Image (cartoon, rainbow, N blue to C red; front, side, top):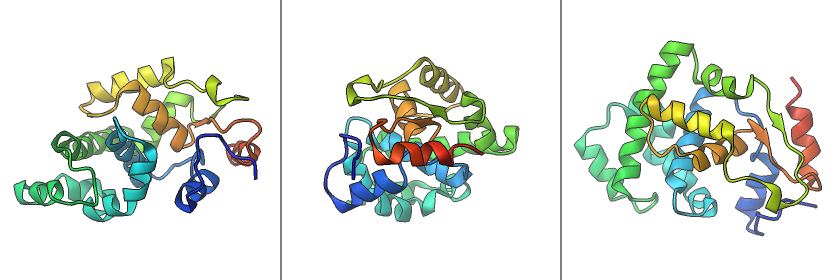
Length: 191
């Protein structure tokens, strides 16, 4: 199978690339999870976070924002001692802060999906990169998303994190044209 050059041969990574990365996500909870995990990745590799993803789901109540906003000092201490996640105090606190901001967006827009997909006009952007060197780390659109998320109180949502989120959640199709997933994702994106 032809794949994007960034994926290694670990089955968990292959499965993520082949079945998740770039598939358009419209579920609010899953979008929130993706955004939080991209923030957890800051300064680390995605592979590191991917291997810890199940632990993150368990530790953060499957990214149920309504539960996360109730976390008290005891729960935060528990998270900071959880070896299954990245035990960075700022990153742990950011999930709670982001849950609060997320719920405000849901209240304002009716869903997080409506808000986040508005950045791409409701349809995935179909890029046509032939080489990994062509894929940007950020774009004007991710700059705009980052700025708006920060204005709304989100943390760990810099432009590069936002672009990685857009790639993962299928707001952009950044599979390399020669990758077997490129056309499959392109077809999924036609709604």
